[in-house]
Length: 129
Image 1: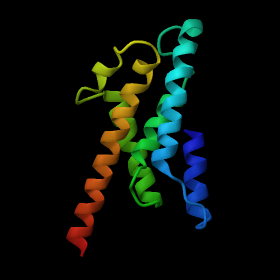
Image 2: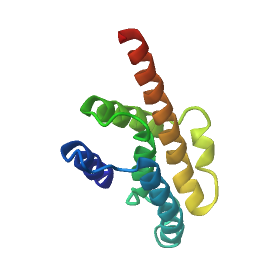
Image 3: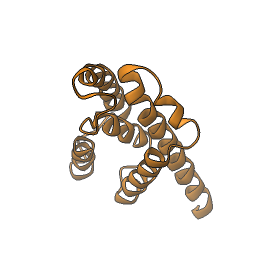
Image 4: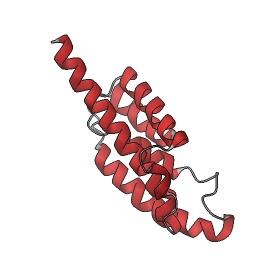
């Protein structure tokens, strides 16, 4: 997640830098499926040292939300809770074969995170004018 945090900080600290979060998420996911599939042959199923799945999920969670400290913090909290407790069919995706199973649960947690934050942002804008 350090990569995602670095990109987010760059987007926040240097207004001229635009991070295309959907492209970052797509790239991390594609690389993650291949890399985690290959790593499983060496380290076993879903090794804890592989974290590209969390980075991809967090990048997805940051898609289409404002780049602010509170939004990042809420995205991190929502994503971690969804990743740990795995509600709403997230746990079923872990059973997919190979690298797809490693990545899919975090991708769905990231999608849910983005949906939660987008909904919350929209709701807050409606309530606060």
